[in-house]
Length: 480
Ligand code: ATP
Image (cartoon, rainbow, N blue to C red; front, side, top):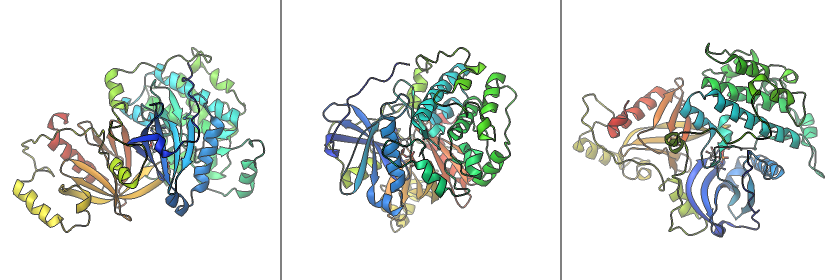
């Protein structure tokens, strides 16, 4: 592929050099904003981390590791690039490549399983990225579709190096693998349940082969539509991984099955590529890649314009009238996703069945009167709350408990119940979809993102039903 255009390294910047636009993502310790450099007009994703929060949660090491790994990777192809970092009294800022087309998980969810040529292309991009990691001595340890972003030309950009391990010492620095040897704890789980390798679950041993296992899981997900090891809880997923309990649907191409089987091998040293350094020759030579030109993978497969607009974030905008910098007021305004959320005009529908939102004007007025004394009332812009409950919003490794408030409007707000701060809302559109995985876990798919949610009390099905009813109420034509 043609490498992305070289961009000059930006030095000695501060938040006043950027206009901050909408929130494009939230991590456990961070908020990611779309931002524009006022000098060059270039767009970046700026990851903002609250120092207080990082220190309180003891995540300084995690943040420093991510910075260090991104610096080692520099402008390597297929990785998010860290342009610069800076800080103020309260926050740390990471200025990153803006991945305009969202993440690979949304891409996979939208397209269910991919055509084989498309799988081959993305698999080859991942192989080249894994070779770069191997060459630079980095094990990602949390490789999964959510951590593979897509740039404006639909090429991959691997991100999220907070869990990574540096195996080759950078000159003059301590070798982390030595520390690992002395600090190794049995069963210390790093990664995400579905993609974690058996050796990380058993002896915690870190090697490049762990990323090869994750690659096998991602390949499976590309062709089947779901990851290979699935169950109702992390514990059950781990059991399946340790027993290598997975199977292929009958219609899966046998060549790719063979490649996946050779990656999903319990003994790390036996995985395809595990004994090779820098170049994964045996993977490159697998028959699945027979027609791949490793020196030039070519453009990413064509995606239909309709799919592209549904997947991409191109509609995310930075309003013209904003001043550079970020203060608390602006932060909470951007958090509430005032800008760019694809809110459709509500159209009421006369429904025959009793729907959660089927309320007379009088009933709404009466309920709103009662709601005024409710502690959540001031956070929902005067909208009537139809359903509320504590839900764990999962992002990567760490779930965060939020009070979810489903209201007329429609809105699905989420609030930090400790600080009582409105953290954001899941954007509504006729394309919103829910998917209950079990009694606790459910997904809310929006065009730009899939939200992983867990109701600790087991009311996942009720949440899905309520959201679907509200959708039917406001977007009756989107029902089918
Ligand atoms: P956790 O820290 O809980 O593992 P995370 O690593 O996903 O979560 P972040 O790296 O802060 O947390 O990212 C939060 C979200 O922001 C991501 O899921 C993604 O949707 C979006 N995002 C992150 N980086 C970029 C980027 N460079 N371009 C576009 N979107 C991004």
